[in-house]
Length: 308
Ligand SMILES: NC(=O)c1ccc[n+]([C@@H]2O[C@H](COP(=O)([O-])OP(=O)(O)OC[C@H]3O[C@@H](n4cnc5c(N)ncnc54)[C@H](O)[C@@H]3O)[C@@H](O)[C@H]2O)c1
Ligand SMILES: O=C(O)[C@H](O)COP(=O)(O)O
Image 1 (spheres, rainbow, N blue to C red):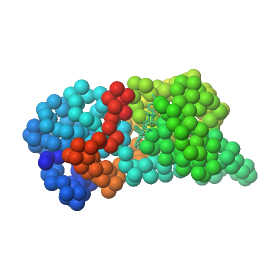
Image 2 (image 1 turned 90 degrees about the vertical axis):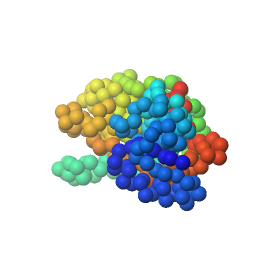
Image 3 (image 1 turned 180 degrees about the vertical axis):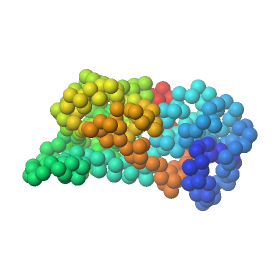
């Protein structure tokens, strides 16, 4: 079997030895290649790149296996008729839990007053307990759910919002348009871990950004276009949103003249919230190839109509 590794060179360095080794361990005889005649390729391991845009000639390819959790850059490709899977990786999940927990605690504990602006002087105002700090998680998938549950274990009252109604221990789960309003209203920290689809683009617009508690913090490790940037800047300037920690943007790298860079109440992180971790992600790729060969359903199959 031949597997095309269609991803940037930095990924190739991580997987070129690891993936063949793990395939062999799983009893799968395969050759991992950087290029080959398209009609000879059985599977494509994919991360966004400029080389592969037309999937039409890959006539025997049985699945395209994304190394990324977010598939918005490939899911709408009209030439892609092969099954597409997204990445759900234990290492990626743990990294996201650490990022979200760290940034939630920064805002909850008011760390900036002591660490970033220690000139504030001796103002002994103790932060409330987590139990008194409502947090809202938009998105309750692999990543949102893990982050929400960790925050709930720390004592935060966490409300989660998703497309279909969920029941998750320790969380107040809401869904639908009305659920979104209820989830946002009064939240003191809002985290967005939604995929980018036509249904989520500009989800946080001026009206919805006015619903959280005055001065609430917004943390977006999901995708940049989930937020209407002009509305967020206006909400920050008016103090309706107290701080925005943004990891993802409409244009990446974030252009040097973008107002987010200079804004005193915006923290920019350069799309580092969490990365796919090769050691665990390779297991997912191998398992999906094993399943496909055995005629079993693929894990984490993308629904083209939903867009994720
Ligand atoms: N910044 C980073 O480093 C980084 C890393 C990995 C993933 N991500 C982003 O995180 C996103 C979420 O990943 P995941 O693995 O948890 O995804 P997932 O597919 O497991 O979960 C998606 C969640 O979003 C909800 N959702 C989708 N559309 C919705 C809608 N219209 N209304 C309400 N809820 C909706 C679903 O119900 C589900 O709960 C990815 O798509 C990606 O954009 C970012
Ligand atoms: O969280 C999940 O189980 C999946 O991402 C699907 O969620 P949805 O049915 O709410 O889209």
